[in-house]
Amino acid sequence: MADYDYDVLVIGAGPGGYVAAIRAAQLGLKTACAEGRATLGGTCLNVGCIPSKALLHASEYFEAAKGGAMAAMGIKVTPELDLDVMQGQRKDAVKGLTGGIEFLFKKNKVDWLKGYAQFKDAHTVEVDGKTYSAKNLVIATGSSVTPLPGVEIDNDKGVVVDSTGALELSAVPKKMVVIGGGVIGLELGSVWRRLGAEVTVVEFLDQLLPGMDMDVRKEAAKIFKKQGMTLKLSTKVTGVEVKGKKAKVSVEPSKGGDTETLDADVVLVAIGRKPNVEGLGIDKIGLELNQRGQIETDHDFATKVDGVWAIGDVIPGPMLAHKAEDEGLAVAENIAGLTGIVNHDVIPGVVYTQPEIAGVGLTEEAAKERGAVKVGKFPMLANSRAKTNHEPDGFVKVIADAETDRVLGVWCIASVAGTMIAQAAQAMEFGATSEDIAYTCHAHPTHSEAIKEAAMAVTGKPIHI
Ligand code: FAD
Ligand code: NAI
Image (cartoon, rainbow, N blue to C red; front, top):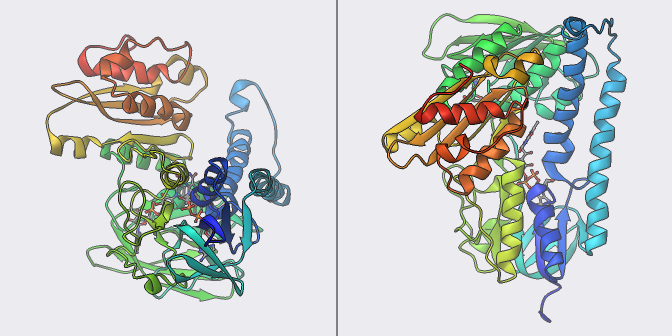
């Protein structure tokens, strides 16, 4: 170690990087973390998971009050939107949590190197004009918005924005056009729809939410339409023209056809994210990118360059905070000579709309490509708690191997699907069969009983339908 300033130097303090740095320090390694952003926590805490959930949560209350859901339970209120206060509590949430990471760095003696790191060689980086060496370097630089060619994003102007700009709008747009019917488009589109915007989602493919189970995608589309979103599926954007504070979005069918123009006060571009590697100097260490611009690693998160590791959004796999965090833990443990493993087959994904949409493991389509399956489904309408809470939308679907009964995938649309999916992930991690879930006692009345009943439906019959 004597030859290096640090045992471990992590580049990027998002959920991947900060977790890797803290775990490395906990394991007794001398650790630093370079971060160029003014606050720690990366995309997730600053402009991603946390601020979006702050607005989703608050706007959900607003809609419940305004839309009559509260009145239906005997709570009569006439809500008035104070967007400044709503945005203030979003900023407070971010401040509190990013400050919390700074506290954890201090507590664990992780040095924060303030600035953007650039490789000089495989064991040396430059940060803000200073050079630091480390035995191990972990690339955790995350991702940023994929631009749409020909469409210029200007978050300051607030007309054509990306997710960061869409979090910071100072007024509710009358008309919002969302380009991309993926996770960001639906979450942030939901926020502004609940607060009063007319939202149109333009999606290139014939369904929303690519990568999710087809039943779930179709049901989600029905629910979003019912909530008042306009969905333009199989449609592509051919141009966005901005005039002052207004935009005109030209769209046509994905396969070609007549052009239509959509008026918008705000256009949100949410067509995916790309790994952050620009300016990192990976060419100087002989590291190449794959076709998707990602850094490839082995199962230990080691790159092909000795002493250089990579985790999170910058490597293949779903771009999710908890995946990055788990890889952060694992890489630190591997660097320390322990065995850090992430089971990439069991990474839950959640869309935090209302109802929430969640899944883990294989879709029914993917499972069928691998062999025969049995599927059990249970509607939330027949779940006593969901029904009592006036939350009838959605279902749970359990997909199991037809021969072994081992659970291959679980999909839920339910008000608390994000919480429910944890038990499915744990069951799959333990190699559970659908029978194991069906014979596990679930507390009553809970939404989670729908998972038990969907599991019962795999081999036999649920009770409540
Ligand atoms: P990041 O969080 O992107 O962090 C990388 C950090 O590295 C950044 O702070 C960056 O400034 C820094 N950096 C980059 N280059 C350098 C350099 N050269 N030197 C120093 N620092 C550098 N995921 C979920 O699981 N749940 C959610 O609810 C969720 N909501 C989201 C909502 C939005 C609007 C967005 C945009 C994303 C959301 N995500 C969510 C995705 C999640 O934010 C990412 O998957 C996660 O942040 C990835 O973590 P990471 O550590 O790989 O990278
Ligand atoms: P996404 O990949 O989820 O969705 C992008 C959508 O845009 C896709 O449906 C795609 O078909 C569509 N699209 C692509 N090009 C298009 C075009 N030219 N015109 C119209 N549609 C087009 O990406 P998104 O929503 O930008 O989110 C990025 C990442 O951030 C996701 O991969 C997700 O993992 C992560 N994220 C996770 C959240 C969560 O876990 N709750 C919340 C928000 C983001």
